[in-house]
Length: 312
Image 1: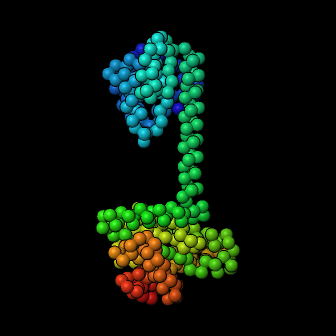
Image 2: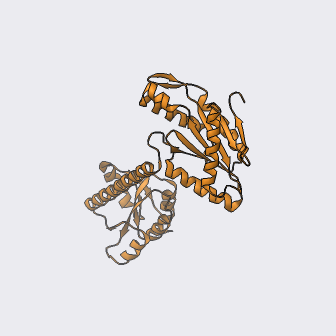
Image 3: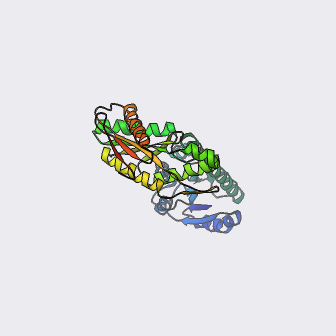
């Protein structure tokens, strides 16, 4: 772990350069406040900083204030080096200091303070990783990695509200893997899961980075396409259909062909809420499946549908 030592007294830096490597730390030195601040702002690997209260240019307290207003940056454990008096410690705490060391610095106390800072940073990282894992569990489908039903419906709700507010286009595509139950019955659940995961990977590769895909129900997936009208959604659906059916899926049970049927619908004044939009896409999907599977259909005006497929 890298430790920044910013002190006008070069003797502390020399002492640290001898001791810290023995304790498992790498020392980075700075002789002024400006230099210390520049290093902290440019090197994310600096996780512990020992800052003299009275640095030249920018003092240690001001560096604390500037670092703490950047919440997007990695945490830095800041130890302020203070004179023998404990005056103005409240100022340092209010500025964001984590700990204090009296000058002249005692080597064993320095070692203890660094160990405490390291443990706190490790704990913080552990909590961050756990929170990230929890967010994945709460919002992602565990099998395919797509958004789960609640998350994808939340995407749709927010994008629908934005489309209404800004009079912007919005479309959705419902994709249903054809005859997945037959695949499970013939090849087994594990092979069916592999087919499902690969189909979702192919769907994801067919859409834009800011489009969203989520598991809507069973083998049915919802794709939300902000900024897309109906014909664009039909084009995307056809691209998905072609990519999914392009090659059989390699599984432990051998190669298994897979196809998908898709229904698309776009935001219109008649579709006054996300439920109506989903209902229209569902009707289009039913039309695609009733036409023989491996097809796409767009819910157009009224009860009309526009259909594409291998023979269209």
